[in-house]
Length: 289
Image 1 (cartoon, rainbow, N blue to C red):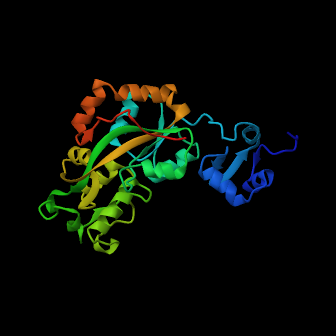
Image 2 (image 1 turned 90 degrees about the vertical axis):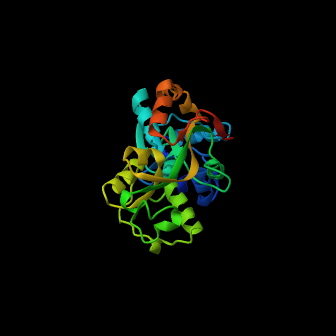
Image 3 (image 1 turned 45 degrees about the horizontal axis):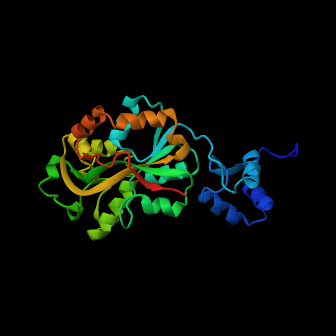
């Protein structure tokens, strides 16, 4: 390496080095095929890792990731992270944004519940061409309409939301994708419901908004309806899974979480929350190449 070579290269510099177009570099980043960092929205490529990648097997080497859990908020997972003493930080930013953070190697694992044509999460992951990742089952959850008592007698299915005040989740959340699909199936448009300008960023925030009278309904979890003593109309059973970096899976923090997840304490908590089925917890649902 020349002494004046920068520690980090730009996308253009990498394209020149590899003798490819910049578009190809972006495609390789999206597929997780090349070592990179994303800092304040800008792509940077560590020169040392890049040279090793070029001279090695042709695949980006898995670097140690931050001890961070990102993606969709799940009340049971949130509780288990605290109770297990896993020492993992959290960033609840929704399934899609969480997957972006994970794909950029900025988190060890991400919680997902993204609906696809045949189920949950797997088609989305296959389209991303991730490397060194495994999808581990966490739980099946019952999701439906959480309703304020005053409108419970008037709202029995999704189509009855017409004209109601509804609290939505943020863009990129798995619930938002599901809500959009259910709106279309019910023949509703965004003009048919009343929403506030700021969405809810967690399952508990959405239910709390209904309990506080800020909205009449939300698309939420049975567990949250129980916690806030609200009326619940079940609509769908969804899969909530954890996509985990294969190297990070064997770190102490992640292993501590997974051991705790199989404990009697965890099983009792899921039963107390309600709306959880842990039959598939720990099962490998998908494995990257």
